[in-house]
Amino acid sequence: MTSPPPLRENPSVSDRDGAYERIYSVVRRIPRGRVATYGQVARLAGMPGHARQVGYALHALPESRDVPWQRVLNAQGRVSPRAEPDWEQIQRQLLEREGVRFDTSGRTDLERYGWRPR
DNA sequence: AAACTGACTAATA
DNA sequence: CTATTAGCCAGTT
Image (cartoon, rainbow, N blue to C red; front, side):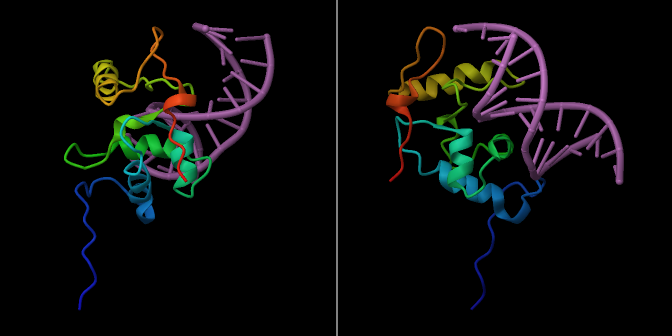
């Protein structure tokens, strides 16, 4: 009986000790219509203080992967800006489609939409 | 190995 | 409220 093959769609990234996979599994637990912050995901993945690492992991995420990356926002409840400005709109639309509302300044109410895992 | 970078955050101004 | 700063730490060059 052989051990299960470690599925990895993107071998080019140096996924040290499966840290990315732990991050992905946390993000996968965020329910529809809820959002979490980078720092929160890092903490739940057992790597407190590694918020940026969460950003790296999501950045390296292949499209084909079943991970709701759009539900991860920054501590201000905003879509984190990145190189391509268009993605901000895309992420926001995905969330609005799930029922997450944004105010006029592009911010969500974390008190209301923030994920509170039990 | 040193320097640079970044989908971060909290504290200040 | 926005802007800046310092701390953070792994991935990349």
